[in-house]
Image: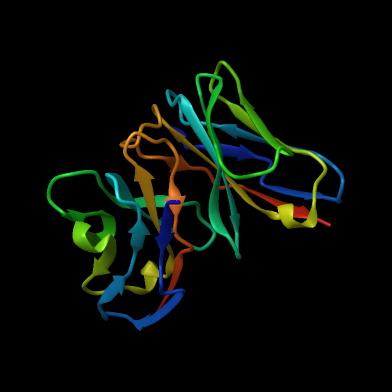
Length: 114
Length: 113
């Protein structure tokens, strides 16, 4: 099976712009989670989607949003970008995202905000 | 609030040395525990996981971890490291019934040939 894919891999934006990142889960996986990875804060949970519904959300401002489509592909959007949003954004998929499911991570999208 | 602590930020070892990376979590309920590894230029991969049963779990590439409930710890071990083990290691915890992982800040391991 193909792994989790994320596009684009690299992105450079300026402050105030918005950005959309895409994630395609492993075939058959219905849960998609998003994480932000920064050197200072490490890996932090953004949100999780299952069957097109957001089931859980981390402690991030409303500028961070996401959605999931009927084919389980997911997008996350960040509006009004700030310098501090520069990070590696990771997507992970699992079958159901129960606490016993293994999450499989994609390579990430490296976002740089100038 | 749930948190995960990895006290070693950077560990440097020579090949064949033994490895132990610490992981402590703060949550009084039932948790499931994971160790992930991120090799240079690669994405996060699962090393091993603990849900229940034998507290000593074995993972890929000769790694193992021991869950000690009384100490809220899940330390990662390997008896003899190789240069190819150079990577960043993340401990993660998920509350039973929840669906989001809490990660530690990671430990960077450098193995010198």
